[in-house]
Image (cartoon, rainbow, N blue to C red; front, top):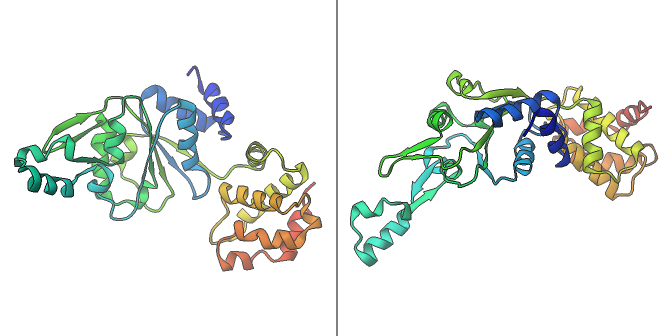
Length: 285
């Protein structure tokens, strides 16, 4: 891949509109073989970046969804105890033979370094896992290898392209940050969000597309519990288009009813009564 402009263009071809700084971060992560840590609020499309990168690289996407209490057995590997027990009962297999690759269950991290061609490894919402799990990652992100006591050290056949995402739930360790390149992903500006909407829903009337983006951008500036992300914006657009709406001003009831796709708490829906939405629509030039 020649430069970040090429990366930007190829991402756009998948429907993901990346700014120059993000395209550069992705380009360098691939060129240098380094993991990329993406931070930003929920709903800005961090996970979609990994999906788009997998398309650009024509690579398999392997995803590890992090959560509190995540441990090595669910993220790296574990032994197939049921199959081992059956082997002992049926064949009288010796103990040392039970701990071979035949009985190994590969979880996302081990699966990622076992591929013949470089996959895209998405470690999603790493800040939801605890610091102990971060320690498991250090060996993998530094040397792309995993040590299994019974089998020894397994090194990557092909170095995966690693994307980590974080929503700011907790601070990540300095050791983890040092091993990664870094990019902050924020909500897109009005022009970028309109480009995203046009790329994903080219059939929308231009007036409706402008109204959708104007309202969503304005609502994000309000004191909401859950600010609508890009995915919610696209859902809202699909809902309005599905109802045959071409101009919000002409269909206020449909607009209000479809806010269920955009605002996800009772308090947030209460903060957007019809008169507020009508005022926001009226600001579209």
